[in-house]
Amino acid sequence: MPQKEKWDPEMAEFPPHRKRFILASDFDQTLSFNDSGFVLGELLGIPSSEYERKITGMAKLNLVQQGGELAYLLLHDPEFKKVRREHLYEAGKRVRLKPNIKALYEFLSNEVEGFHFDFYVISAGPVEIIRSALEGIIPPDHIYGTEFEFNAKGEIQRILHVTAGYGKVAAVDTLLEEMKVGPDRLVYVGDGSSDIHVMLHVNRRDGYTIAVSENRYLAPIAKRSILSENALAILIPILEDVAGWDSMAIRNVFEAKGFLIQQWDKVQTDLLTIIPHNEIPAAEPEGVVASE
Image 1 (spheres, rainbow, N blue to C red):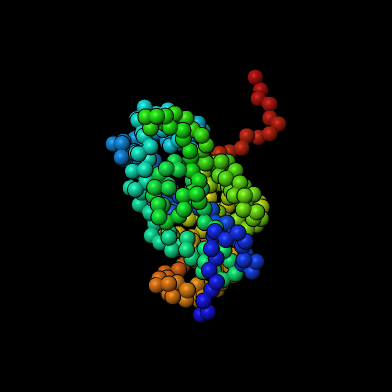
Image 2 (cartoon, rainbow, N blue to C red):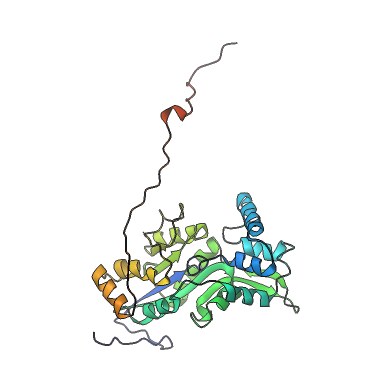
């Protein structure tokens, strides 16, 4: 294969023969195997069951935007208020990442002929945790997360910005504006309910959305779903649907990079709940007035 021209992100001008896209990805359980809140809780000695109880309670009350539960706990919960900046950094180092995120980043930057994808991470988690977890993999200025103001003792004093729910919509719109990229050149990848707002927004503006979970609310919204424990799997729908590659070309490039696609099953899933007719409540007859 002829050597492709490499694009230097520091160049002032973008090569005119390459289509420029933004790939925006969630972090927790999209690029990682676990939730940042659970990792931070374990660091503080808080059982996973207790953290789960706290965030479930907030979700039932609709107290905060979905994905913003940890930010609320860090500011208001007695057990989490003792967190310092160094705890967030240490928690990031304990996050279990999916393999080959760096390979995914480099491939999308330089290896898709005729395309360049600027890779950004947009997460509701504390930005210190995400930047620590992805240190040396993705540049820190390509990572957006919840930001806090700390006092002189390193304690969290207030929330500056929460990238949860509609906050993710604002983040992708800011990226599009700053980079002068059209909304149809945006690819968003996510896994949970906190990604619903942004996926609906991206779809409405002719962008492309990928779900990496079987979340019952997210999967029907996303244009493609991909399930894998390897971050490189995100390439599959991008190469097929955005770059127009066929499956053989995708398999060949994976093998050329030292990877084998061992199993690739394409399925369509319909979610149904079926109950016997006699369990359906009888409808009240209309227009009947009860006699006294």
